[in-house]
Amino acid sequence: MPKPPTVADRPQDGRGYPVPAITPFEDGQPQFARTDYARSADCAVRRLCSVCGTAMPAGPVWRVVGAGEAEAIGAARAAGRPYRNLQPTWEGPGHRACMLYASMVCPYLGRPQARRRVLDRGTARGATGAVVGFADYEYAVLESQVLFRFVDVVEFLPHDDAATTHLAALETELASRPPKERS
Ligand SMILES: [Zn+2]
Image 1 (tube, helix red, strand yellow):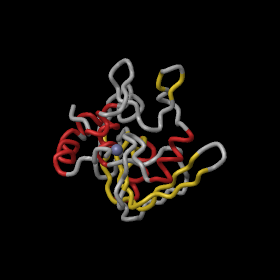
Image 2: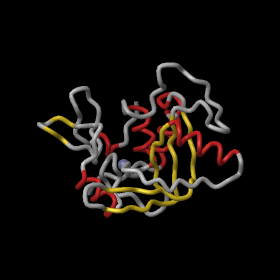
Image 3: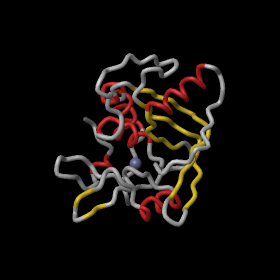
């Protein structure tokens, strides 16, 4: 599977999965289910990608959403309504390439659940999640956690099985504007 160059530079776990920038280590082992407070705050304030840890240009940012949010966004778009979710999340934004890649490989994201569903791309009914572009993000660095809020959906890519759905988009993205290497 093609990999953003900035993700290829990340440390890997024992299975070869790249470790996202916001993932804490404990006893030398990445804790994928957790989010490191300081790294997350750093990403928020310095506009760094939560996957690869390098700078994101001004403009849209991306994240991977789960089935419930994908369906809500799909329903809003199908009805011609703007999608507003004021519920903050601790999941930070990232580059388009990094989020496409993360949805395809991350064991916690983008994998169909036990039973394969049928995806209606118009409404995202049956989606297991989506890679979503937002006009921008807001954040709050609180005492014990960093919260993000995303405004204005500018791109919506629902998936059933992310690995097959997003392969072509990731290849095109990497060929046209890969995240810059850290200089
Ligand atoms: Zn990135």
